[in-house]
Image (cartoon, rainbow, N blue to C red; front, side):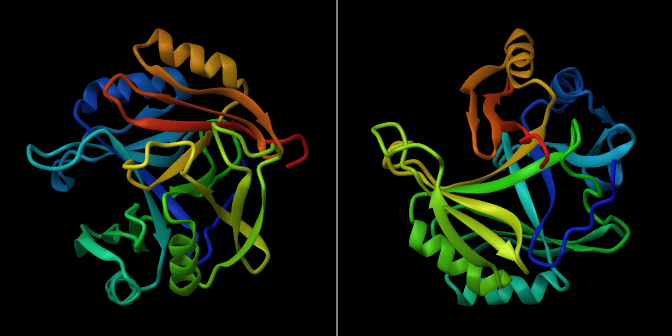
Length: 263
C-alpha cells in the first residue's frame, strides 16, 4: 500500500451520510472489508472506515431534517473559507459554511453551477485518505453532470484543473455518450466529467461519485446484492478498468473499479 498525498485541488476524502449508520457499517464491512471505528459523540457519531488499517472513508447517521443516503466527495484546500467564497463568486451555492470539525480540519459543502454537491477539506490532524488503488481504497472520482460546459469551466477556475476531452471507448448511443473530460493537475489525472444527458433522466441532479478499488467487480456486486443492495451498473470493461456500481440497502450509490493492469 504505497502512501498517497492528495495535491491541492484533488479529491482527498469521501463519506456517507446514511439513514441507518449501524446497518451501513455492517454492509460495507462485508462488501469491502472495511472496519468501522466506534461512533465519535464529539463529531455527531461520525465513524472512520478503514481498509487494512488505513482510513479511507467516513460514515455518519443523517440528521432528522438533513439529506440522507448519499456519498460526498471532498477536495483538498488550504483555506476552506476562502475557497468557498471564491466558489460562490464563480456561481456555486454554499450549503454548509466553512466550519471546524474538532481538531481534524475545516470543511465546507457547496453545490457547483451544474447542481452537484461537493465538499472542501482543509486538513489539520486528519489528512484525508493516504492510500489509493488498492482493494478497499478509493481509485477514481467523477461528476455526472447535466451541464458539461458549466462544470468544466467552474472547476478549471476554482482548482486550476486543465481538462482533456476524450471518449469513453464506445460510440454514442441511446444509453450513454462517449464524451468524457479528464481533469489534470500538473499532468496528473485527478477526476473526470461524464455528461448525464442520455444516461440520466432530464430532471436528474448532477452529482459527484467516488469509486472504490476491488479485486473482482462481479463478485463484489453479487455480494452487495446478497446483502440487500441493488445493481446500478453491471460490471463493464472500459479503458479505465472494469467499472460497476450498486446501491446499499438504504439507497446510497457507490461505484467500484478494478484498475487496468499496469495502472
